[in-house]
Image (cartoon, rainbow, N blue to C red):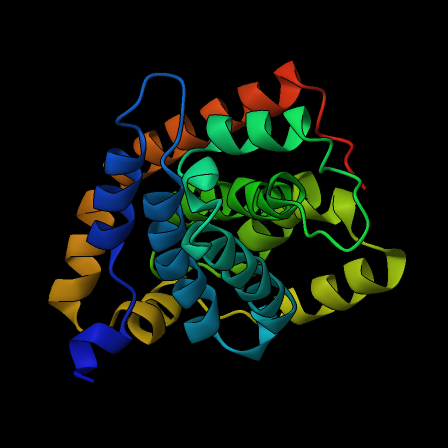
Length: 213
């Protein structure tokens, strides 16, 4: 594996999310997951501070990949809308011994809310500023609402160890050219990420699925 491929690549996030929006009011699941793989790499590269997030997201992605690859029912999971319709029509959301795709995607959806807000705040920082405050604010506004008291406390303590923006970007993106490309692409990436997030948000609101256990 090349050094380049080990680093976080904002372009992969942007391009796959853009393709994921190809159907009106819907999201292509395969491309969504490929973007999410890269976003999760971002947190893996930051270090153990985000292991509580990245490990959980990876497990959820693996479940959705398996549903997509199912030779009999994989076509029902090609898009978010198709998946929700299939599971609702077949009473699968609360079926025992069945791992719901809609419930699994909800966990990623909540993670994406955190990721996009943190990246937005990160983009607004100066190189010498610490990223911990921006991360804590993003976490408190999003993922913390779905975590237990112990997880919230552990996350907030760990977040204080995050470095400055300059150090974090070097750790995640690599060299100066890679950092510049990532920052140049950040506004467009945030825009397409917001569109993906809102489409899924609307579908879950429409079917009252936000409170799935």
